[in-house]
Length: 556
Ligand SMILES: [Zn+2]
Image 1 (spheres, rainbow, N blue to C red):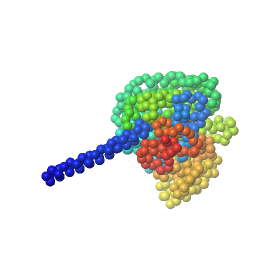
Image 2: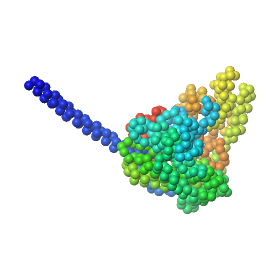
Image 3: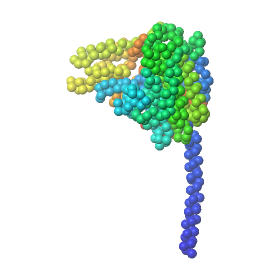
């Protein structure tokens, strides 16, 4: 009897436990489905290379309802969004948007920079340890190995146990590689010349997936070797300067920088298929490829959030070639707007309206062509960097009997520290003497030594921007900034790189799942984007994101 009662009590106890367990199990299930339902299935991060904020407003009346305006009208528009470091260039821009930090921490101090240890110039994405895939060209020897921190795409991979995918796409290798991060499934970029294909490297895979091979085998690239004419009647392009002027470079083989451009006949003198990159069609082929990737990579199809990064870089080539006030720029943005509409429609169809979140920003903006500014009496000009270098060398030779300059690049002077030590000089003294010398040069507006950058804290202003771009391990001994609208560049076309507003002020638009409708003039910074996306996904912030803050007002 005792045995039976014991058995009975064990059975009752077991039943009771089971009864207790059940609600716990179903609660967890409910919680997890609640959790997944509140996350987008896909996050799309779009960078428009060299996009100024005023392109949204200057060309507003020319845009359709489904591209930029859809983001502005359905989503959130941060109208006072800025880069918060110098130099405002492509590689640091892409790294900073997705890592939520600045060159000070992610280490991408420029596109190319002088490596103090290797004593030579290195390329931000160049990697001799990997091989090209989809080409035999060195254009495939690329990886993100020089970026020292994670992107939000990396953190999403870690969070989802590698179940959420990360794919990066651009015509520029660095525009595809840096955003997608270290643990990306793939980054694809466009290789022109005689090939016209999207390629990758063995960092990601050993052969291109079938969908990429199919895309390359199709005649998409060939189809863009056609005349580039304005989308609307050029007479209606009243938001830009005259088509024929003194401020545009143009393509080789065509006398004037004026519409139309017959890419088929111009291609041989302009890098073969590479000419596509320099026109509005470079954005179209990226949109085509991104749309193909939605199906090819099965993006946004399950509960594990995927990340797709798309960088439209042809805008930058067109800006450098024709300047920010050109008819070519206006047409490029009108056509990009149409490509965006096409891309958003594909997202609606393939991932589903309300299942994805998109943000759009730039990697930097650009200055008006200084020669044009001069013609309308605005202070601007050109710097003769070679002459300045001779002046610096002469100064050092006279003062110390030696020329310590190893390299000058990206407005940074790299000194020969070994030689300085051998001569029993203090590095700090030589840096300081050079700062005092160059600040007297006509076009140099600010100059600081590496020692000052490491020991003084600048909370605001250009000094703060220089400091956030200064990386103690990789940057030079003296850093400087030119006067506003003074550039070291040819007299035709626009460029970028400074800490002035024309280079820092860029669009920031969010729309889709989890995003409020609204707009703000409150100042936001480029390093806020990655923390905002991380907050939306409720995952860890990128590991170097110690500058930015989630923009709570954009989140539902
Ligand atoms: Zn550029």
